[in-house]
Image (cartoon, helix red, strand yellow):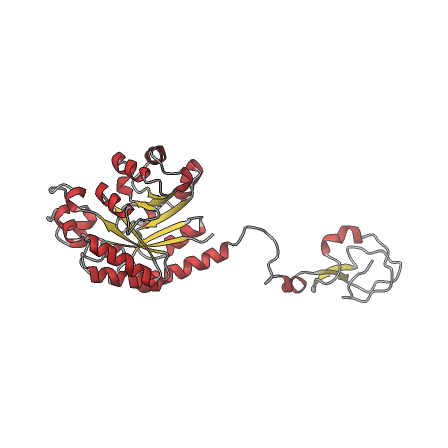
Length: 336
């Protein structure tokens, strides 16, 4: 199964439409399926007195600034969105954006954008009006579950499905909501726990440094991978330091596709590449000593040696005790 790879540009455009276009170019060059932005109006997302998260203050270096002031600088206009959709189409990569308020849901659901599915962020898992609005669109949902308990996830699924989201259209993303996320707090096995509890497809939204954790998640069954990326980690902004640069994004996509190929179909049988090696690596029953016609085959006058072109040694017990049908020289394959 092909993993859906979402390159999270987020707000790493720093409010610049031109930088956003360059992020689309980098995502397309890396071979991802979607490049994702964030759609919001600061006035509707956050109070003017809300403080920055610790990671935002740390990454920006000026924690005295409010979330509102920070986010206001990072808004993209409706025209910016429309231009990005067109640019994604031209570059052959899917456009996606996460809404963070109700009006942004309406905007992204309507033409000319009309998203085909939603990526719901972890912070909205407990937002009933938001989940209700998403559910009413009836579109599939990829739901991030950072900071959430299983009961909170179950409640979110209930709201989505009660208002119109098909249950079989929901994918759950395991996530650790910290930037960067400590690797010893990733807990990838929780992804499998969610699959067992809810019977839904699962994936992983990664905030760790490097690419090994999302690659490991694919090996563990992730059907969707989301990863932040930037053109340059040294740029100012809240998320750049926890993001991949373009060459790293390419490497992650390449390694994910390699792991997908290696996972195979689960059938245990010799592969086409192995078959020529079977007679070379396996053994046959051969004479350990000279054996005369009529002499009984014994543990002493038989042995197993390569190549595996004669009697299989798994027939050993049925051969021992049988009379030799002819003379055999040492190392000669045994025939019955």
